[in-house]
Image (tube, rainbow, N blue to C red; front, side, top):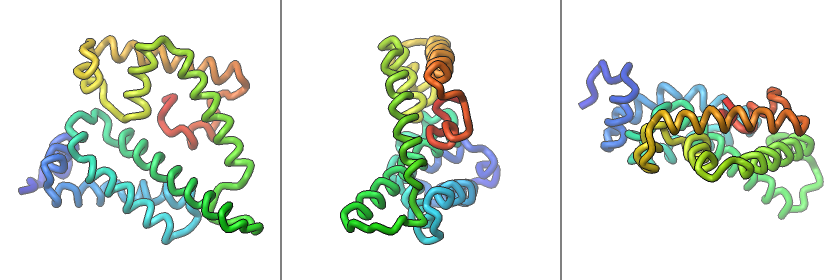
Length: 199
């Protein structure tokens, strides 16, 4: 049974979704659908494609609902799931276009310069992450790429929550400087492509 107060209490809502409560999941979808759909549409440039991607994103959330009790910031977690699903969809479209040897540029996929920009930034960021000390790299990856909350990381790695936070702060500080030193300051396209990685 979904209580009215739970509609405004996101941690309680997530717990109910994790327990398989479909009404709670519907409430979560209703809350976040417009934002995620808009994000998908910005990439897909196609209403049907954006709707399909958005449905897939929320199915990913439902299928992985057992992870939700450990999620500290659901909006960040959802953004990561959405970003991964969008990239997967775009890669598939690019592969299909290549397979068909379509010489006409598609209107609903990234332009070549955007693809090159993403690959360049992603490669540089990945290289920067590889320069982090092993423990810091592990914590950063769990937080920013796997969407895990500080408490969950603390429990899994058997370290204090403050240590987790310290690793994240220092990793972000290093990566911001690393990107800037290599000619990639914190510009808007980095925010678009890498989501909340460096926030």
